[in-house]
Image 1 (tube, rainbow, N blue to C red):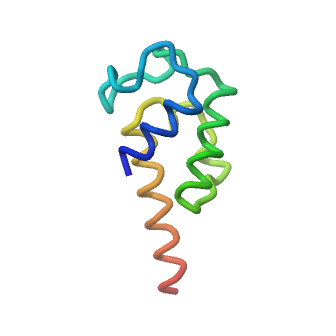
Image 2: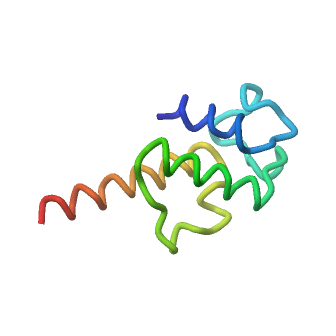
Length: 86
């Protein structure tokens, strides 16, 4: 999952710092992620992982780092699993 997120950030994030030079906890906005690039990245992530970010996740903190994106995706997976089990 992390490798895919990093690839999508490299392709869509328009970062000033190469993603390979950033840790998973690095602030992506400090590395050059703009709100527009965050949206492009979010759409790419939705397509790659077949998920849809709900409105409550459409905030700056959700895309502030690779770890934050992973946390959102894990939360989405749990939500989907809970719905399927119900």
